[in-house]
Every structure is written in C-alpha cells, then in structure tokens.
Length: 165
Image 1 (cartoon, rainbow, N blue to C red):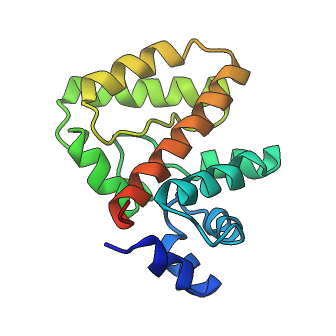
Image 2: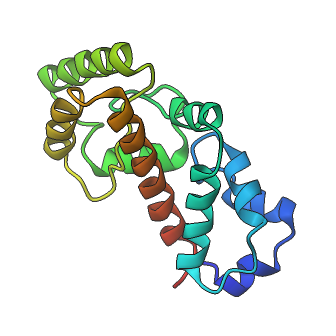
C-alpha cells in the first residue's frame, strides 16, 4: 500500500500508470486529478478524482459512465471489476438471477443509454438487484446524477485499497 507522500512524489506518467484504471477505462480522470497534487491526505486525493469527474463536460461524463461493464457479465472487466463483482456474488448467480440481471441491464440501457452503475464493494447480489429494480424507474436526469455518484464511490473504494490513510 502506498502513502500519500509516495503518491505526491510520482511523476504525472507514474501517477497515471498507478491510478489510470481507478475510473474504469478512463485514464483522463487520473491525469486531471494529478494536477491537484500535492494531496494533504488520501481523502484529498479522492476529492480530486471527484472534482475531475464533476468538472468534466457532459460528453466526457457520459463516456466515463459508458465505459463501465454491465453487471453480472464478463465483457471488458478490469481486474478490479472482476474482484468487486465476485465479492458481491455476481459470479455465482443462479440461471434465474442471471436472466433477471440480463433483462434489467437491457431495460436500463434502453431507457437511459448507458449501463447501470453500482459500486458493488460490500454489497450483496440481492442489494444490487433491489437497487437496479428501483433505479430503472428514475428520471434520466436523476439517474445520470446517480451513475456519476456511483462512479465516484467506485474510485473511492479503489483508492482506499491502494493508498493508506
């Protein structure tokens, strides 16, 4: 595990190499967050990633959301996503559960134009499925905001796994 001092000492290229995958398939978030260094602590680092995402234009935000895989699939999963989804039991779904996730993924994408995002670390498949069923009824604006919030939770968990407090 790295310290904040280690993170602050990295070159921009080293920072992007170490944290470019924190925001799924979107190293631009790390590149932007690097510009806010030095970080006083891990929380300041996390806030810098959030600031990078929230200050981006809508097209960049949509691309970031769209870079996330569907839950309960194997398509384009990073190592972090694979581990996080397995921890939530999404790799051991029954045939009925898998069919339900697949149906909800398709309904959600048709309604909103991007994949359902849920920071699965610490959650169960039942919690995720319940949230999925509720959120598919949200307005597009509310769900876009929720997707960004979940993206920020995902990289919070990932940074907490890599950088000591």
